[in-house]
Picture (spheres, rainbow, N blue to C red):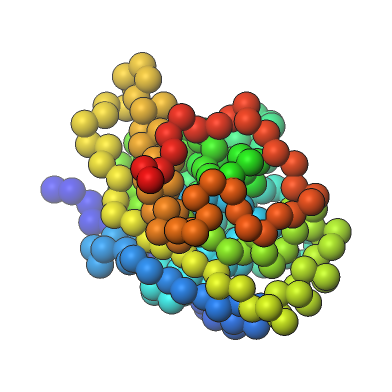
Length: 258
């Protein structure tokens, strides 16, 4: 007999933080959330895979998940966990530390896979960094999200977001206060869209190329969900952040269909 999954219950601290995030996003912009997470996946096991466009977008995703009644554990950079106060809060909230560029990355993936297999929803950024594509479309992804889904046997729901790059600049904390003040006055529309689960059943973990194929499908799905969020910005964003570098070495092969 299969052992029933005991779904992870988000600590009260994390639920309160999600409410606070929703209030903060409401102060600096107008949050619009579309799409949804299927009821049977809402409490896990599930991998949420999102595009990464701004230092502010983790707050936006936190708020959007609260709107949809989802309480994800976030795979976040180790620097946050080393911060004196934020680090303790991140640990108590159940988030997962990722030390990029070290051998501990694989350990982080194992912890995340255990969390998902145990019934958690885990939020990941498949690109592995704030994207530097000139058009701000998703970059070629790292295979970690796909490997996580394979290891845990979990569904992957793509999440696209747009607009939070108008709130906090790429070089934050430099220019952050100016960006927040401008956003309070202009109140940009910040959009988040949850897509349909990505189909990966035909791919077999351990088969050469399977993780790469799964990753490309996930990035494709995020790209497809991003299209309706920026209908009048098909090539380049209207808002130009002069401190944001651009790079084409990790450009994803797919672009949205016009």
